[in-house]
Length: 175
Image 1 (cartoon, rainbow, N blue to C red):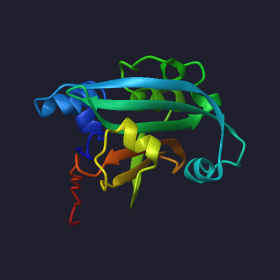
Image 2 (cartoon, rainbow, N blue to C red):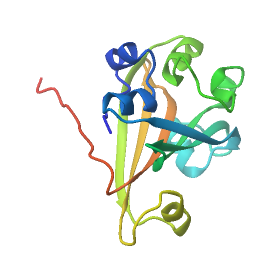
Image 3 (cartoon, one colour):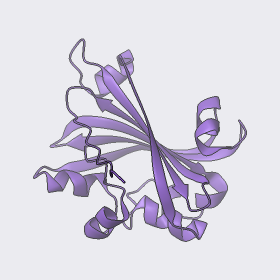
Image 4 (cartoon, rainbow, N blue to C red):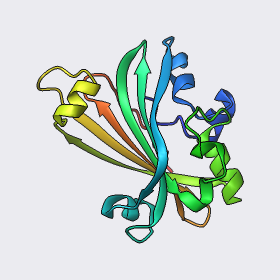
C-alpha cells in the first residue's frame, strides 16, 4: 500500500486518489465492492476523529477492496453528513473524480495534511472470513484523517489491512 496515494501530486497523476489506480501502478487489478453508503450517528471513536459530538449525523461509506479478485482490505470512510449529503460521496457508486477532490470542492478549502493512526490486532471472526485470512494472521488498522487548511478534520478513513498482504511505506522529509 502506498501511503502517499492521497498526496496532491499523486491525485493529479492518477486523476483521483483511487485504490484502483494505486494497485494498477503495481501491475495488478484493483476493485472496490461498496458494502453500504448511508447516515450513521457518530460513535465515541468517530466523534474523536472528526472532532464532533457523539451522535452527530455522519455519512459512512463501507467497502471491501480487492486485488486480483482477492479481498485485500476493508475500508470505512466517515464524513459530516451535512457536508457531503448532496455529492457523489453519498451515492453507492465509485466517486470518479475522487473523494478528496469532492471534499475540497464542497468544503471550499484544500486538504492540508493527514494524520495516520496505526494499530495492530487479531481480526474478529467476521473480518478473518471477509479477508480470507489464515489462522494467526493479524490485521493492521490505519485510520487516516484528512484535515483542511483550518486544521478541521473532514474525512476519517478507517482501513483494516491483512497483515500478510501489506507493506506500509512512509516518506518523511528530513527538514
